[in-house]
Length: 258
Image 1 (cartoon, one colour):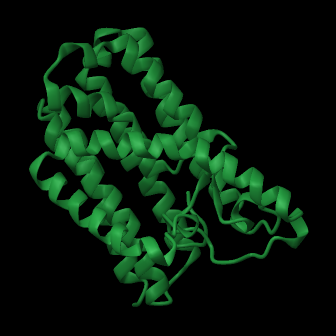
Image 2 (spheres, rainbow, N blue to C red):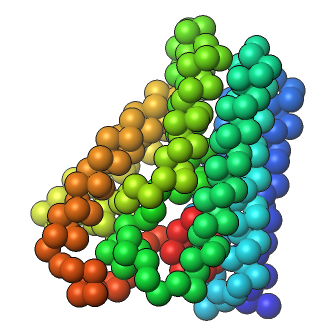
């Protein structure tokens, strides 16, 4: 029975992602993006609920990955295609397919590595590539800008297609990215971080789209920082000497992150 709660949250995240497609079909792209973001929030909760309740199961991990492939792979691809990529039926559809396929490939790679002991990125406290929920958020960047500014330049289907392909590559890449365990601020900065989180929440309520743009840009800037930090960690300690430490924040019910 303990596994019921995290699995129910996963199902709710899946329904939220699918509802985003329904809003996009109706032409309400603001609600469609909000539905996928809600799916991302629920996806961040289900794994933590499973660990808190000690209800981590292989079924939950598989269910989470299947739900993520739809909520953060298929749903964003269809939403962006219905928004602007349909103007380029060939290139636009190929870009949408590339994003959805790369998301599924990333999740399959994650599942295949669940039982592997030799994972240098994970043992050092890093993720491999961009996680699926964050990939969905990144691919919406042109849509955030379009909603916030109403400028048609941000809906250029060629630009959006290239952007989606780039994000798809980041998801399946082997680039080490920072996990939550690597972004713990030093004690002297924790009060400032708490204040920043509070201000960010206030900004999301007052200017949600510009705030999402800012959050996306900050994450993109953290990607090269993660690469530099990982190389520094690897130089300081050979692979066998790196302590396992806490696992990166999980997107699923199992250890690690997708």
